Image (cartoon, rainbow over all chains, first blue to last red; front, side, top):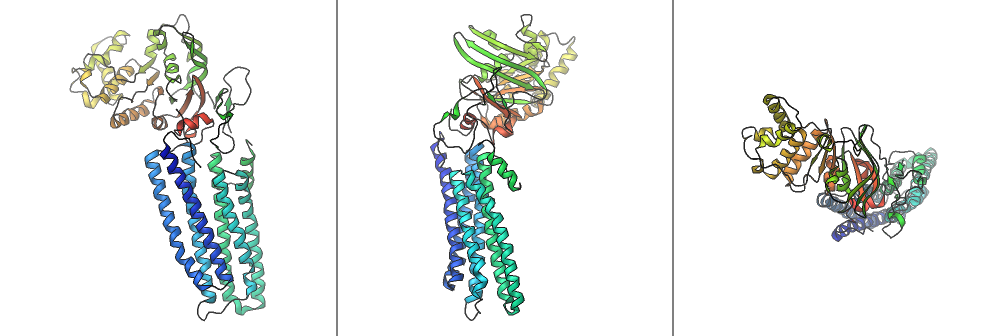
Length: 238
Length: 294
């Protein structure tokens, strides 16, 4: 929520942009959930809707960029307003890519269940489903941290990305034991690995958003800093 | 890290108003001023002001301001109307001496000379610390005589040839030579507003100042003339030290290397312009530059 500008239409412009980010996040998270549901429930039609639904996120991505360009040209933002606009510009890019990953997950449903495709062993999908739930919550929390300027929540999201990395590696190990036991399922396993990779990337995008929030609030760019530096920045001046 | 320089000797309390976590717009004590936030010192100071108070009669216009003006830098002074930025600027070459009831306390040094010393002669001081005003104010004389006036009264030349050279060089530095070289005998007041302002800058340069003070030099100019003067300020920085008061925050951001934010007679924050306009430390500075206040 932005307020306090003498020119009230400036507040409206910034708030509108802010709401647009929330809208894109809601859509992207719904897409990820629907894509995973389509895999679990073997719902080919739902997967097709997710694939088509990605266009809506793309359209919002373009609309956000247009609004950002217009705001910069009209208002010459500085300080916190400038940081908010730059943060939104970067967040929207990450959210749009989360939408792309949801589309990739939905494609797995088509490969597994469409027409006469052979369904995979359900055990192969356990890690994928669990991790997808975990990273979707990360995305929601990252955007909440942006919405409420909550540095602690932002840091928590950044930390959780480490858990995602560990889970990803564990899941790969489990899959490789499946391959050793039953080499006929190699095709499915490759698909599942790609799915896990998509889910892992969604966690990475959530982490990016968490780091943007630090920039927004503190004015320090911690995108490529180690976790300890992010922690140090957040604990300073508390 | 945040660099806090309390203005009052002995004051060590961290300034309230330093933006901490988030930027909730709710009313709190974050807008309290207690000392200047940021580094008041310049790497290579040309002028140093310390604990300057200015009074107009009983009214205090400037409260305990300390600030360095660094060599070959442009420092911009910004703030809402009545915040004291012009008053402070005018202290730097004792222009306030001309105002009845104005009293200046504290110490202002130009290099190692105290400009408020009893023995200080303000005429050479104002040649060393020149001033360009808001409204172009050429003398009702020829372009040549406008520029030659200062060198003549200060006795800077012995002969016509040297004077011609000073006039030409000053007009070249002010970016006006090509436009007026064929009509040096025409009246200065016949030039366009932007040309008149550059003529005034040439007139200031002609007496070889060390510091140039500019009090809203572009507020009466159109955007093209403004751009020319801003380009000129950037070029002049190589040879001179420039302090500029401006109402245009974009202009401060464009032309200066350091920015000082004044509020109700106090220097709230000073720092690198790049930092002030991306991540100011004091809530009042942020409120002002983002258009939430003023």
